[in-house]
Image (cartoon, rainbow, N blue to C red; front, side, top):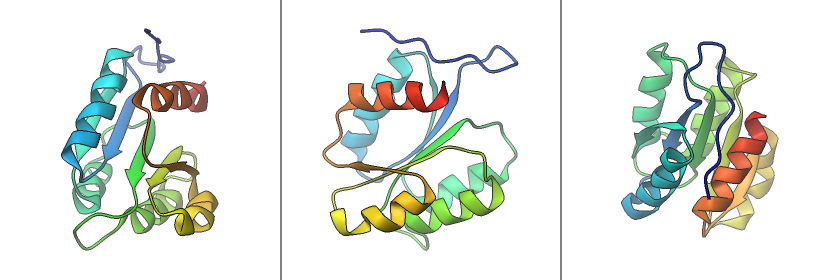
Length: 128
């Protein structure tokens, strides 16, 4: 299945920041997104994702896991993104259902385990 993401004004592929510390999950989701035509920036930690965000590079969506190592978890990252970039769509994933309420206040909650193709469809719909 091939989906073509919505093009930005500059005719570049939509750029997704994928923040996930579990390498195999990150690889699967990133591969599915790239196969669908998205540009994917991968980060294993929220701290690294925040550095990318602060670089000023264009970004169209953030998809972050909640639980990860470092000074920030995914919810803290989502809070910073919401404060600084209020129009940027945020997807927040976790295997812990108890974070759904907090996550849903900042973006859209996605339960684990992820279906990479489902993630592609959701992101394409979110950005349309």
